[in-house]
Amino acid sequence: MAKSTRPMVRIHNTQTDEVIDREMNDDELAAYEADVVAATKRQAEEKLKSEEKQAIAARLGLTADELKLLLG
Amino acid sequence: MATTTNYGWTTPDDTALVKDGAAAIRTLGSSVDTTTKNLNPETTLGDIAYRSSTANVKTRLGIGSTGQVLTVASGVPSWATLSAGGKTLLSTTTLSGTSTSITSIDQGYKDLFLIGNIITASATGISLRFNSNSTVGDYSSYRNYLEAGGSFSYADVNGGDIGQSDSNTAWNTQNYTNLTIFRYAETESKQTFSFVRSVVGGFVRGMYEHGAFNSTTAITSIQIGAGATLSGTVYLYGVK
Image (cartoon, rainbow over all chains, first blue to last red; front, side, top):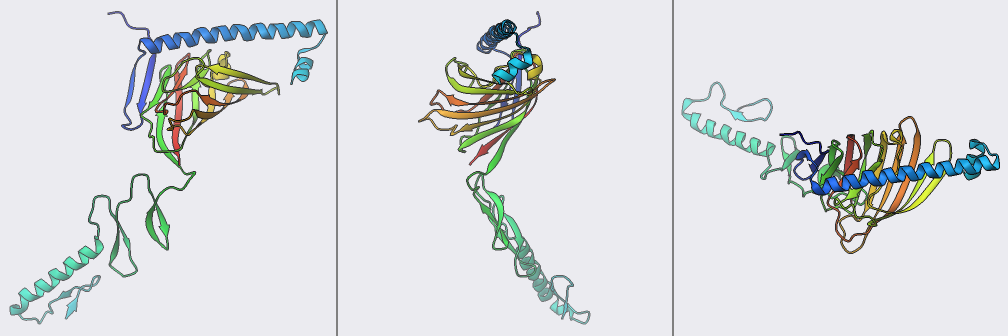
């Protein structure tokens, strides 16, 4: 049998103190994959925003420190 | 008549007559019985005993109620109910996997307070969710970020979690975190939360987020997730 590559999750029942480690079920895997997609999108947006700021600063002749001071 | 050193039990003298032996043994036994009972007044499972103002006589303190704590009043021990603001440690959880859920949370408190260090090498940030709810729009919050260089940013978020924000792996390594959930067990109003995170990992960043969980369901579990394996420890407290 092929070894599963699904991420593991831990569940800690605070009433019984029982700890279960198991692979993600279908719903958890779907949520996890959606998180990764959203984070990747957010990362790209942040990078684009940063590049746009730098481009504006360059057009205005501002250094990175001056821009930070202006926006801080 | 001779007596014992510690408890003064009466024993026969060396010159006492054998014919009086039965009475002497009965007297001694009765004294031992009385003293033993005086030293062990407990009657019920969980009872404890403490020294009374009379030598060799202890006072019984019956077992308290669930959640009560031992305190001192008028110079003697007694059980007392925690006053408002007292914290009770509900669980200590070692994080593992890409998510760890703290489940079956005691519903007998007003607020929850979670504190700990969430360690991960995630490039997708960390996220906290209630009742495994990841519905986008169910967490309405306002996030502030303050970076070591002094820059400040903020965001209004209608997301599917709390805290997920940083796309830089280094920013997610060490997350010194505390999360307060107000009125978590109520079902008539939406729960509000306050989340503070101090990140250290080649970079220092502070984050504060406050908002509301758009649900009228009592919060019975907290899920901590990341895009990579978690480690570290979190402590969950109930606040009266």
